[in-house]
Length: 150
Image (cartoon, rainbow, N blue to C red):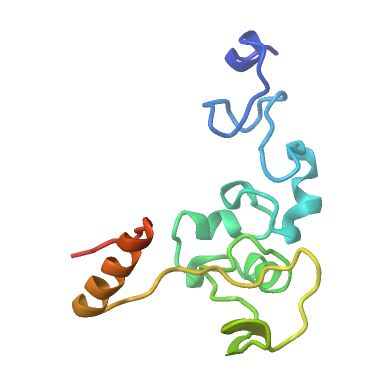
């Protein structure tokens, strides 16, 4: 079968409108491995959450409440899948402490193995006064990344 992607001499990716049963389709994630290996990588955080169907991450990726996810998928997600750690608030314990090298640093308060999810910074809520103070400091340094939501 030659889908429109193959006719353009491209491999199918999830961004294209190929059907899930297209034999040429690849889901691209870290390493660029083919879809057939998705089940092997389900617990490694390397599969796009919307295609990680064996553990239920695809259900969370479309914002289905956890209560509506099947019991078997919920058990698998809690023990293996690393694709929706932020949504599940599953992260390592971290602490801030003074560094002997320079200023303050972030330190782990529990063991972390290679390729394990640690934390994702999601921003901070600031008062208007604090935002203006930081904005002035950042502009003087030539950097600025303050976003105001109403």
